[in-house]
Image 1 (cartoon, rainbow, N blue to C red):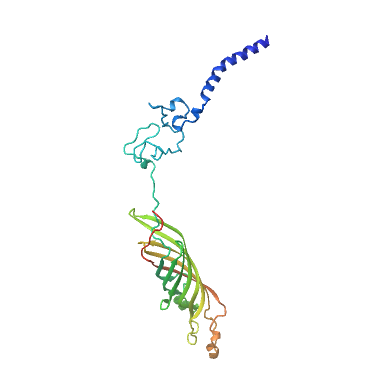
Image 2 (image 1 turned 120 degrees about the horizontal axis):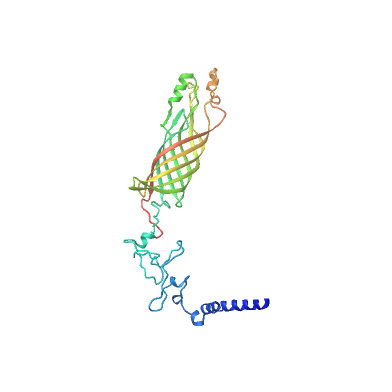
Length: 329
């Protein structure tokens, strides 16, 4: 009896599954003719309601898109054989086309602006005026000229010349200390100097000013080596001591920024540190006139490493004034 019930149950399950198996075989069987059909004759979708057939039997494209991250090229007017032209109002998912809305409105194309002023193979002339920042006892003001030739857009080699004569001046701090304490500090003056430098431009950009002007800027790093002519100013024993200028090996590092006014003219601000060994006047004095006249007693035997930090302001002039872009816009 139990065995008969099992047989009846298997027969019932077979009768119920038979229509489904037949239906699946009808849908999933492809003949050679069907395999050779093009994509225009085949419809892919989840159901019959997602595909529509035109009068000539060609399958129409489904307007639904289940993945919002995908962009249909046909909707942008760039698909092969697409019916939508660029600039024509379109809508997705059956929505009403907004009036005046175009493909470019929904998917704007932003143009990348070319560099405002090219630097490669141009000579950058920089006349400037500088003041020292870190010496409270004497001011080393200078007139400077820098000439840099750009080998690439970001790398340049150049020379720098500094003229200090007639611009050295004792500060009020030094005068007030000498007057109040009857003590003085050894100070030096500079004549001129020259350096060979390398420049590297790591930053370039632009910003809007008052929502009317677009100003372009760049920032560079500079470093090099050269020399300075300096000498001590006699303040300890002025009656006997006089000093001559002496050459000093000097290194320099700095950072500068430039704001373009035109494609060949800009204003700039630069902070540069000139580092060199300096000899200063000896603070030891003698009563014996013979020792006072001896030049060996005038100088401090200890050499001091000096940092002359200069703030330089000037203009940047590019030669030639014009240039050509080598790459297409």
